[in-house]
Image 1 (tube, rainbow, N blue to C red):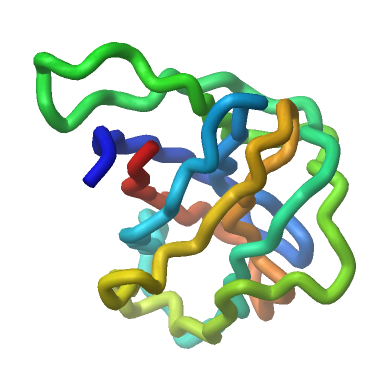
Image 2: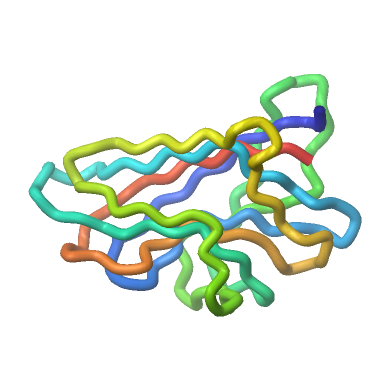
Length: 148
């Protein structure tokens, strides 16, 4: 078992908007194993289709240093971003996860053992949690947990 970390992000959801990314380094392959998505706005009957995709070029966003779950662990090699103004370049048809979620519900996905989503060991590549489509524009928050 590797070292475990947490990162988070938020986004004003519309179609094709990234909430949080997991950016790899050349020496590691981070594994996403837990994901939570929830809406922080006044609840409404609206839906967003969320996806996790691989990307080959990071975009422009706000950096967030992932937090070690064990305080004895060092800082991670992987990094994270949210609040993208320029979206990452996703790899076509790489929907590693996809689910439509009602705005009134908080959603959690946990990988079955061995079913973690793996980012490549390539600098500036990684995984991004994003809205593939949405019936509303509102703010959502997303938390991810990964190991490396």
